Length: 476
Image 1 (tube, one colour):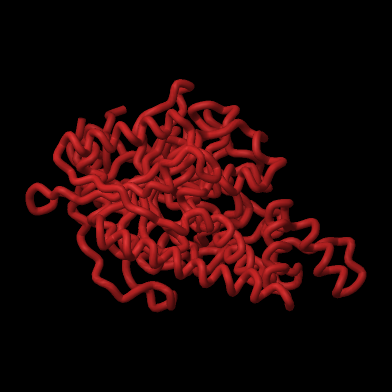
Image 2 (cartoon, one colour; image 1 turned 45 degrees about the vertical axis):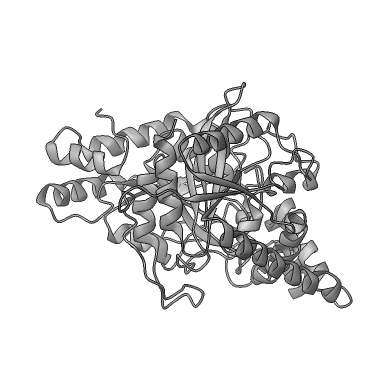
């Protein structure tokens, strides 16, 4: 089977007859079957083979779309008409979507092949992909470690070579963190850049849809398809979508800001010394190549985790109230009356982490606590956004570690929710501010586990983010 580094190379191989798209898809399906122990997929679509035949003909005739032949997996929180959509939850067992999410439809319209739905933390709530009704997802670099969450199945499907790319969602780091743990690229776009229509809501003012891939080029290509205003999503923005050309117009030396709060190993959550060293090596490479690197401050960073979990659990409590056993999904057979139907269906249908977040959210929204918690957290969210506004007056981009540690062992943090939540300490600020961020794999630690570097840019400056990521590939 011919090897390729990105979609452009793959397309050329298909055109020249050196790569059969059908055999390519067959190989992916075989790998998925051979790697079942990773548990990356909830559902696999065998009709991807018949799609491959149609699209290969379109490629050879020159009538194919931008993503023709790209084999993509989709996180099981995005709807595809007449396909299962469970959000990895018992409460949506056997549910089939009645329409297709805009983001997925855009991929299909550009001739991508959807190979299946990936496993995830239930309702996208988690940082390790241990909270799924379909079971734990395993890291392909060490099967005794987590892949990160909540889009762990998507990250694993790309890292293990089970597809070309994947679409995940990021509410507080759920694309970037598993991308870092699995050693792939993962982009969280600006809030409002990509339609959320057809995405099952966790926290509506945070949720974003974005891609995983093995190259910056493929990330940029997929984003060019996903981006744009959707009349069915009032939060999607009417803003120009660039072509995401990564070549630029000549040499471009960006100013890079390094927030002192992120590289302080004594900060809340800590920072693994090997990750700190790897990130500092990248900073030194930038300096050696003539980039301006300056220390900046994001002074409210220490409040980001508390703010994030107050606001997202509040939104989750509201969003998940619709799962009551009455309209669709799981209904308990223990119910003798309406009250019991609601109580038993939700008790049996939801997992432990989802229940925890519903309870937290209901608490912070309750009478007597709304002002003390929810309203105050909204004010801190504004302060965090203002921190980034000031930082981007000094720097084009912000560079940080993606995670405080590499992928941890399965079960290591399950008994301590606070430690689990702190694994998102470097990613949640971007969601609170609504800005774009990307994980870039920068090597491995002494145990052979991937290390990720995070880049953040100002609102709707994904092109700047991606061009700089492309430059980093070439620097030594």
